Length: 149
Picture 1 (cartoon, rainbow, N blue to C red):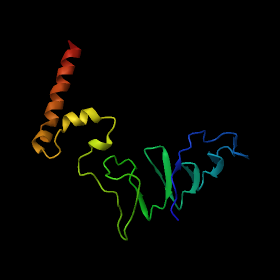
Picture 2 (cartoon, rainbow, N blue to C red):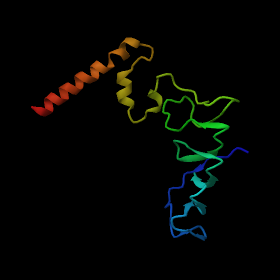
Picture 3 (cartoon, rainbow, N blue to C red):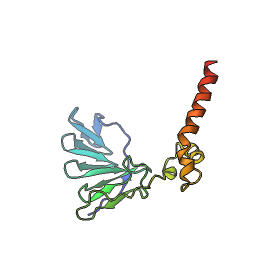
Picture 4 (spheres, rainbow, N blue to C red):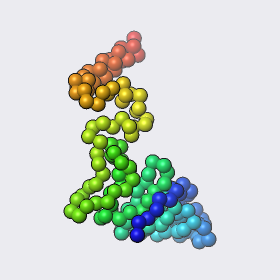
């Protein structure tokens, strides 16, 4: 059975009361309206899951999905260079199914967008990429010179 994404719970991890239950300090957390035990459970989105059997994939839209790490990969995990986000199904014997973006990462780097677009106007132009470090170094030197004078 595949899990559905649920909104990420942003409330306190250890409030006095969670839903209708009292939270055992130091031993339990609150996930939306359910308590879970720190020993072998976690909060994924708004759902409690067994951390020994499942993993949690947090998506860029502030939802999260419980998944079986032996069957699926989470392509939203720290890999900004993944082509497709979300979960993918592992083929038998494979260790990864997230497709990497072979060095072209502009689309997913929202924060550095303008910088990266100036830097790599043409994905296939190797010469432009080779000269990037020099350009960066020059601009840094100019800034340093201005600030020190």
